[in-house]
Image: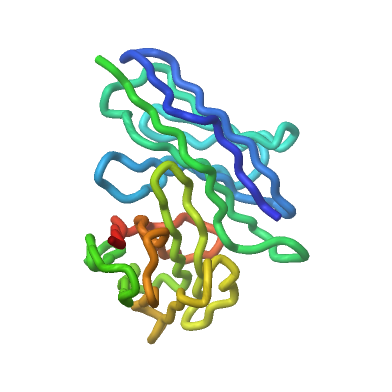
Length: 117
Length: 113
């Protein structure tokens, strides 16, 4: 079956620090990969995505590269802000349906990011 | 509205009562998902609809949980004889393409006393 593993939180950083949140996955097909963000008191929203190997998704200064060889999709940002404090979820959606595959998006457990001024 | 709408936003109930949670997806989105988010946990998949049919009910935790979708639109998640362990935020999401981006509602927070 499909699974997503992301680093445990919380991650606590000072403003302008470099951010990496690790995400690795297991999938039976050719998945699309996503990062969702949940700001305090709000619903989840898409941050960025990549649909095939070597694609780089980017948005709001965040980026992640789809690495098929290491089955990873690590989230990075060069300089975090207090407003980036949120919970970040890595997810995959299998783009093929076959034995063991499904269209059910699979989420990691989420990583809480706290940025201090 | 333009987004996914869920109601109620908050529900406090007594153990043993039944509850209904409603999800109104984005118009035209054929795929609809229910997830459960418990404190300190990730998103637990409950059920998926494609149109009005539910090809995958594998995530429903017990037979106390059921869901339906009518007219390819509104969905209702029903929990019978609620237990304290049912306390969580229930999230609904919809999508144009089952393998694409999900659009989430703000969730229904259920507290079972």
